[in-house]
Image 1: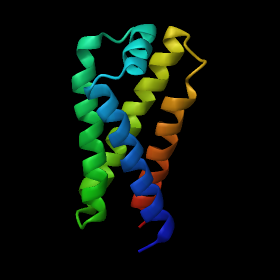
Image 2: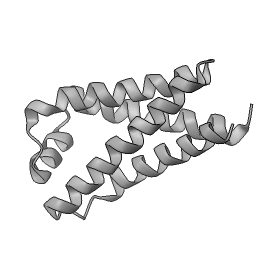
Image 3: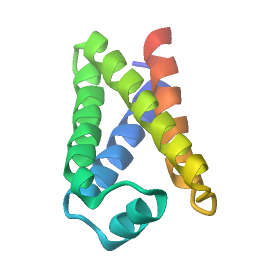
Length: 116
C-alpha cells in the first residue's frame, strides 16, 4: 500500500472525526464559530454526523471498499468547499485556515484514492 495514500487518508479521517465530535458535543469554539458565520446551532448535530460518516467512509475505503472511500472523500471535499464559501460569504476570514485545511486534506485524499 502506498505510504502517502495511507498516511494522508488516516490523517484526514482522524481530523475529520475529531471535528465531528466537537460538533456533536458541541464544543464552545464550534458554537461560537457557527454563530459567527451564520450557521444555526441546531444544525451542528447533523453537520457532525455528516463529517463522522465521511471519516468512517475513508477508513472503510482503506479496508477494502475503495469506491466507498472515494465517495466519502468527494463528499468531504464538497462539504468543506461549502464551509469555506460560508466563511467567505460571512466575511469571517481570520479562521478560514481551518476549513481550508480540512478541504486540502480531503482533496489530497480524494486525489490519492482516485490515482490508486
